[in-house]
Structures are given as structure tokens and as C-alpha cells.
Image 1 (cartoon, rainbow, N blue to C red):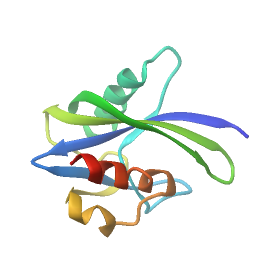
Image 2: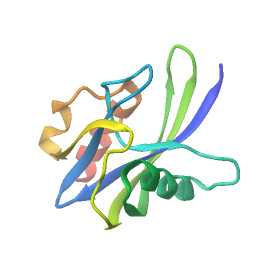
Image 3: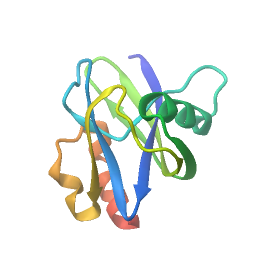
Image 4: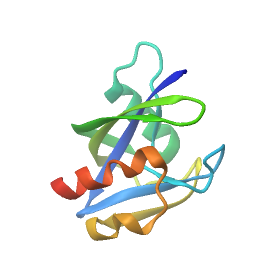
Length: 128
């Protein structure tokens, strides 16, 4: 099975977490933490800064790594490095997503998370 290595940003601002709804592809409509694929020669942190700039037009500060989620989808294995992040500059602009929400910790389960992303909810609850 093919492995896809990606990164995800758990962006925290005013005690809220930024969630995005996929606007394309097989998982269109599902909610996720923004991020994307790690390119050749990039560190996970560098990939995250680049992906968030491309997807949301904001500059982020990458903080502590929360976890690496390993998840088997039907057609591929996902290895997702997940980091807490803060916004250094800009306001999120949705370039690839259908919608976005700022969620308080008690509202994190109010959206329909993609299977790999939902595994982070309990860990985030324990930290925030």
C-alpha cells in the first residue's frame, strides 16, 4: 500500500481551533485540520508553513508536535505529522476549502471530521 506523508496545522487563536472543510477530491465535504503533502527536501515544519500560505494566505508559527497519525484509508496509508500553530500574520482566506470554522474545545465534535483527523480530537482536548 502506498504511503502518503502529510502535515497538519492545529491553528490556535483566542482558545479556538481552526477547522476547514475540504472543497475537492474523494473526501470533499469532510472536515480536517489544514495542511498538505511534504515535498522532497522539506522538513515537516517547512512543508506546513508553505502549505498554509498556499491554502489560507496566512503566515504561521509552527509550535510543538502533537502526534504523528498513522491511518489506513482504503487506497493508501496516511502518515500525518500534526503541530500546534499560531498565526504570525494575515487573516485566513479559503483558497481550496469550502468552509472554515473557529471551534472551542467543547465544540470540536460538532463537525464531521475525516477519519484520520478525528483521532486528534481527544489529544487536543487533553492539552487545550
